[in-house]
Length: 340
Length: 219
Image (cartoon, rainbow over all chains, first blue to last red):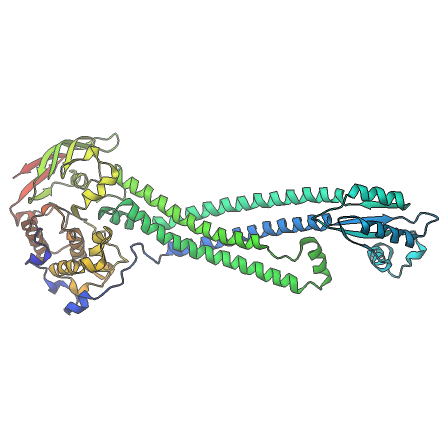
């Protein structure tokens, strides 16, 4: 066909066409917005977006929960590590009030102590109220007095020296640096974090597998497109590029929907827990779990998750195209769909 | 242009479906490929279109020995061959214009650069008034013409057509044959696989007759 189409004389009878109107040259030559080579809308594509959104939502929730547990465990550790308690027992023949004041002064004079304060009788009464009831007169009971010492974490005091000095100076005084508690909390926090990481890893594995299978399912509906592109001489990289772009968009759409819903959930939960802080029940919850607000790591992790899931969808489609085109290039057995 | 030497094809451990094929397709030639169902026409077309490797023998296409070709070299060779499938294989989500332009689009050509060629080709097959229609609203005959136009848009050196008149009435089939003949006169080699004896009787051309996997050539 060296002369090109313009040199050809024969043409098909247009009376076979259902429309008789003759298109004008301007109409024919106008600019056209070309459709995407990979079909934009399909049931499988919509299902893929939905599956990706659900998995992204669940994975983000898991990530947020792990981040919350991690932050709370670290919070426990920090709160305990920044405070020590000195207890003065009511030993006979001492002036308990003077002894407590003396302990406070000794503690405050130590390097690395930010402040030392005596726990008031009223505060002690409130602490004991659940066990001994209201309206208690502490002067009638041999209740020990407490001094709370806040330490400077950047320059901690020599706890052993402080303990020795207090025990030597004030009879009946003892120092508790909460080490036993801290050790237990640390191991509990570590275990909780590892359990969280394990659950998150399982969730991610489930997400990866679901996204991979859903992508392959959606790709199955596009095999005829791959075949046609292959037969009109498209290179493997071109076909893979078209599908990768299309599935990256689908994955991004799903992952953004799921991830943003989860982020919205975190924000709502944080707002709810902050606004209910005066409530006694939520006070107790806040004491244990903080304010239920997911930290920066949770938000950043969710954004990374959205990106990873979208990429995963794109990469899966790329590999599926390569595998399928590879099969087209190799020997095809009779009865397969690649027949003429 | 294309040369087969003692080519045989066997699927798996079965019997050979093509046996000792030796023939050539010369530049500018026109031939019908015919034979009863199951004679191996489809397998032979696949060999010609590089979508099937022979079990034995040598195939030389455009000066290249297909046994030594890497997979990445195949698209470049396929672009020199146009193919019309019996079931058209049009993409339903693309317009008629886009379907015809597809081979150029996958080569990375700009739309403005090929617009005139696509429209000229559509005029030639008489489908300009349906230029923005989707294949699903076209008749079988119209879809067949779109498939022909798509196969020709990049001016291939060889055109393979599998039962191109299978969906057409006799008048339209005759018109399509005249279109192939004109194409051939413009320099394209044409291979038409068909059962249609009436079609073959309308044009005196070389016949490649397959029977039980063996080929007889009637010049």
